[in-house]
Length: 416
Image (cartoon, rainbow, N blue to C red; front, side):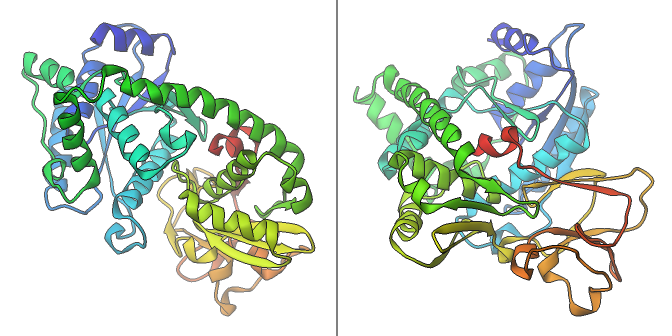
C-alpha cells in the first residue's frame, strides 16, 4: 500500500505539498505514509487542520494533530472560519465543506504550496455513489472522485482512493500510530452514517458486488465528455467584463443540447460561488425554464443573480452572499472565490476587503471612471481600514496592491 501511494506521488515530482489532517484514521494514515517516506525527491510537507467550531471536541483534535506534527518535525497550521458556520443559511455540512475548502485553498496559496493531499478512500467513493443515486443525481453526481483536480493553480490530490478504511487502520495499528474517532461518524442523524450502515447490510446480503463502485468510474468518463462539449460551446456563447459579470444571448443558448445548457448554467453558478458541488437539479431547472420562457426575468441561485432583458441574460454575484468585512491575513489570497488579491510585502496595518456595494456614503471620497452602474460594481472588492477606503478598482485611488479577476480558461472552466 505505502509503495503504491509514494510511487504515484513521486511521479508528480512535487516541490511542496500540504496535507489536510483532521485526526481521523484516514488523514492520519496519509500523514504517516508521507512523513515516513524516505526519498531525496520527497516534497516539503506542511499540515493544516480545520476547526469548524461546531463541536466541543474539535479544539482537542487539532491539538492532537499539532503534537504528532511536532514529534515528526512538520510545521502545523490551525485554520478556523471567521464566520460562525452554524448561523449560516443552508445545509450545515455543505457550509462546513465549503468553508474548509476556502480555508485550505488560501492557506496553500499563502504558503506557495503546489498541492493539497486529502484522505478520501474507496469507502467514501461507495458512500457518495449510494447517497447520490438515492437522491436522483445525474451523471456528474454519480461520477467518481478523481485522483487529482487542479483549481486556482493548486492540485487537490487523493492518494488513498484505491484503499479501504480498514486497510488504513490496520497500517496504523501495525505501526502503533493512534488516531481519533469522530463521534459524529456514529450519529444516525447524519445521512452519511445511515448510508454507511445500509451499505453494510446490502453487502452482508450479497445485494451489492465489489463492482458496484465501478458505476462511478463509468459515469466519470461520460461526465468528462459532456464537460468538453459544454466548454467548447461556452467559448463562443459567454462574454465577461472587467467587473466579473457574464452575459449571453438566449437565442444562441437555446440551440445548444439541453445537457449542455444545464452544464453551462451550473458551471457559471459554481464559478460565482466557488463551490465544488453543483446546485440541486430542481433549482437549476427552475432558472433554466425562466431563461427560456420569460421575456424578462430575475432570479437568484447559489449566490448568483440572473437577469434577462431584450434577449440577453446578465449574470452577476449576489451582494448579500459576500462577506461584509474580510480581515486580510495573508499577502496573497483569493477573495469571494474569484478575485486574486496580492499585497506588497511592505504593506502595514490592519486591512479589510469589503464589497463596493457595502461602502457607506461617507466612504466615497473617490471617483470611478466606468460605464458600469452601481449594481454591476456592487460585488467588486475594495480595500479598507477601520477609518478609510484605501483602494477601489477602476477608481482614481492608488495603492500598492494587485487585484485580478480569475476568469481565464483554466480558472473558469474547471467549474464545469
